[in-house]
Every structure is written in C-alpha cells, then in structure tokens.
Image: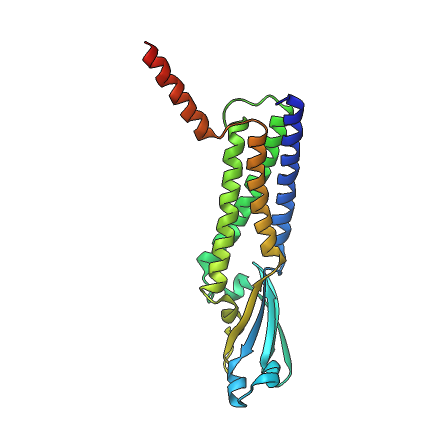
Length: 232
C-alpha cells in the first residue's frame, strides 16, 4: 500500500482514538449511566395497590460512577434526593467492584491517548520496529479493547448481580423497602461501548494498512525458517 494511503488510514485511526479519549472522559463525569424505576414495596403492600394506583409508589433514579439523583414515591408525595458514591455509599456498595470500574475507565483513557500518539507517530514519523512501530499499534488497541470490555462487564455485574439501584434507594431508609421495577443503561454506558467498538475498528484499519497480525507474521516466519532448514 502506498505510503500516502497508510498515512491517511493512521491519521483517521488517530483521530478516532482522540475522540475516544474525550468521550470516555466525559462519560465518567456524568450521571447518565443507569436509569431505573423503583417500587416502594412497603407502601404498595399497605394499601394493596395495583394497576394505576401502583404508579403512585414508583420512583425513579439516574446515576453514574460518582453521583446521582432520584425521586422516592410512597403515596405521600415526591421525595427527591441526591447522593454521592464517595464517601457516602462506599460502606454499602461493592466498593472494590465500583473502584475497579473507575480504574479501568482511567486506564482506557490512558491507553487511548497512547494509541492516538502512536498512530500519528507511525503516520508522520519514522517508528522503530518495536512497540513504537506498527506492531505496537495492535498491542495498544487490544489493551484498550480489553479495558473497555472490562468496564462494561464489571459495571453490568455491579448493577444487575449486586442490585446497585436497590442499595442506593434503601440506604439510610428505616420505614420503607424499595424494589427495582426496571433498569436500563443510559447514554454514558453506551458511549463506553462505542469506544470499545472504535478500538476494534482501529485494529481492522491497521490490518487494512497492510500490517499483518503479530502472531500471523511469526507463524509465517517459522514456516519459512523450516523450509530453509530442509534445503540444507
């Protein structure tokens, strides 16, 4: 492939990586990771609510990695509340899991930045045939894909398996018990998924630039070496 085309492909991939850095950094700071509807179970059981009456006992919440807001409804009007994971909820949520999500988001930003720099370095510089070179681009993008996948899996397990929404609603609650009615992942969660897909696309762009996968190149080298040995 001509050098000019390779520069264009690497430049496009570099711009995509820079976009991922901005997207993930913005997503981390928002409270739009999860939207949930939560039933005040105690209040609904007291009045034996059903059908349209049940709507009076369903509150809502939206939250992210650091803070969120919600509205509790137990038939006595709306009770709006705001909360922060640090330090308020660290004693009741799965802290190690939550911190891991934030950690891998930060790692994702770091390696997206590294990938961005090395894409432009390979497009306009004279890279060494090491981690600085085209082969290194596979490594950086595979690491970012792995981190993005971990963020999605860990956060999903925290929300679904550990019932994060119920923990938030029942925190410091004495009189009422809340149960999750429905949950859906909001736009910030899907932005992380988009970043994951973008780095997967970058791996395909590297291959499109004519650079073979590292393991494939090593295999072909072994075959050629074995053929040379047979000649002797």
